[in-house]
Image 1 (cartoon, one colour):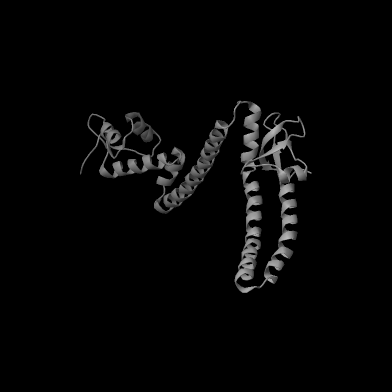
Image 2: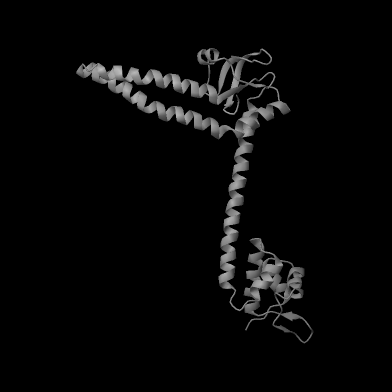
Length: 241
């Protein structure tokens, strides 16, 4: 049977000699025998045990936990359960790290479009990012409710052209007008705008907002706080009265 010295075990497991010695003092990797000169000698089973210890340490288990597990007569089932729990914990950490990375990447992209870098501009971006999901929900609601109305419109147009059935188009108008009023009010009450000049968040008059020129993320408005007129950033504003 092969015998290994402390240095050989350390080399095969990718750790230091001090680590192997430390595990001996903790009682979780006691050498099978000692040489005549008092040197620690480890067997193949000891080496496998050391590799298991190193693996458990790499996945985050403490020395005390490993010692208690290996002291059991059949530790395999407990180790498997702990590894499953540790795997789930690592998955959650990865998900959180990805979320943080996404936020950092978004913040970096947003800052590239800011002419004057300031604490206030970061605050504006942070607020917009934090409420982006709520704003997406508003846009999604408008889209999903608008699809059947648009489908009814095209059906009415086509039936009028090819079949002479004008009543379907009238039905669309009867549905579309109330829908347009309701969805416009819903949109108006759900959004607000951030002024790039004074960084105040405001809600303009409905008429100004409705007729203002806009891009997917901005609208040309007059700030109610400082009077600046220009493109203001759209954000969630449903919590404003």
